[in-house]
Amino acid sequence: MPNATPPRPKISLPRLSMRKIACFVATADAGTVSAAAKQLSMSQARLSETLIDLERDIGMDLFVRHKARGVTLTHSGQQLLAEARDLIRHAEAFESLARQPNADLTGSIAIGSFPTLLPFVGPPLVAGFHSLHPGIDLHFVENSQTELERALLEGSIEVAILYDADLTSGIDKRILFESTPYVLLSKDHHLAQSADPIALAELAEEPLILMEAMPGKPDFVFSYAGVTPRPIHRTTNFELVRSLVARNVGYAVLVQRPVTNVTYEGLPLVMRPLADKIPPLRVILAWSTAVHLHQRVQALLNYGEKLFSRTLPYPEGEK
Image 1 (cartoon, rainbow, N blue to C red):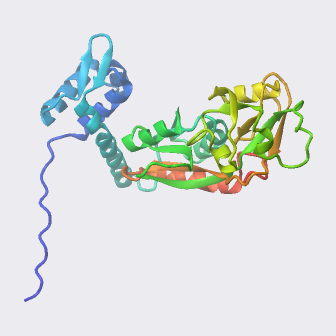
Image 2 (cartoon, helix red, strand yellow):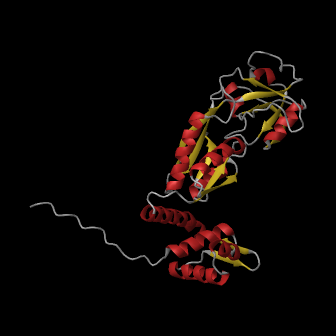
Image 3 (cartoon, rainbow, N blue to C red):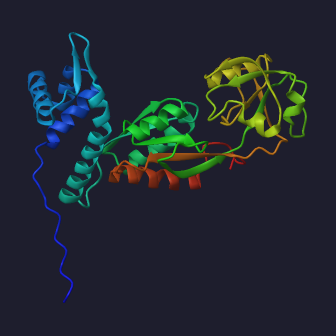
């Protein structure tokens, strides 16, 4: 007897509309019904009615309304938000493919970034990508590596510029380039004029200006070298680290390399290579494997990978 054709899965009509779900996501992002209504070009009363209809459809409250203080997500709302974002992205991708398969991409992309990376990676990425896709707006969210990974998994950002260091499971990546840690010294430091690479053991007893926004553990470079540093100041401000070093308050170990060796105050700095065998840090574009990537995000990933395979954001020798 010939094999019977398996029955197709039964399709039922969903009760929820994409319009209502989009209103839910917009209100969650805006924090107030009035701000979301303005963004969606709706009246505040109409948006409020739409949200109430959605809550009635699903049988649960999504927001807690605060008089004169906007809205906050309920626990149920928090659980549904990532799925709602993904549904909207799927709908946008379907609409784009169905209506304009060969047209320029439009919309916006939320990009998270490690704070010290953004000034180096963001400008060339934005300028070049915008010239190819002027209909796509890129906006950035700066935060720590841990918070950006959480935002990717929750769907509040679509892609992030990160270091490839202890990534959470469920995150995929494309490598942009590699950066090598180095020692930053004042011109008056006793090792500043040395032509040889500097071993961290030579600096072990000296005060360190610690950049706490480093990926993973702040002392990961010292761990590789087997050295215990002596931090005298801790900060997440890249230029403050450089300024304190220039005044000979201490030394620093950094990854990003500005083209100029001068601080905001006009004081000179000296960058010296490390003698220790520290592996380079890979800079990546990362995204959640659980979230559908819209065509415009795929275009950004492709462009970023191609861009930094040709041009590095640091002086030659960093790769």
